[in-house]
Image (tube, rainbow, N blue to C red; front, side):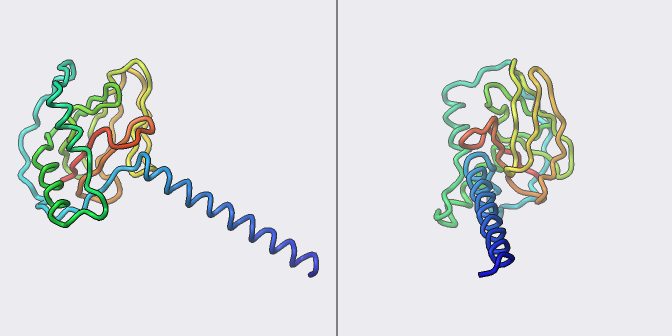
Length: 179
């Protein structure tokens, strides 16, 4: 085998290894912190209600925490269509129309926010440490301590349900329903 062929073969092997690593890395990130865009067959033209003020100083009760956790657990890929639709309906009916999401200890308040597509939503970090809010594994927004960041509610895919992670959490910290 001549030298040029060996070099080309070596370059191809390195390129294949690099691409394999990048694919693995992307899949690992998406399984850890990527939000789930649930299939939406529920009416996406749900009536827009008046924004509900959220009191960031009010602590969540244990019942509220249990309910929030249930909302954040999206159906498994092998769930039945009925289970997926029940989840979508539950999320849509729980969405609070608001322009502000408060983050405290990587917990979103409200748990499910409702916003109009392409509108602004403010994420307020109520903690004394910076938080990273992650949508779709590649949309990362760093929010300094005791500060806020305004994000355009598009998320690249239009209307639907978007989970977001916080600081590399293993599951969603909250959800945004884009209408």
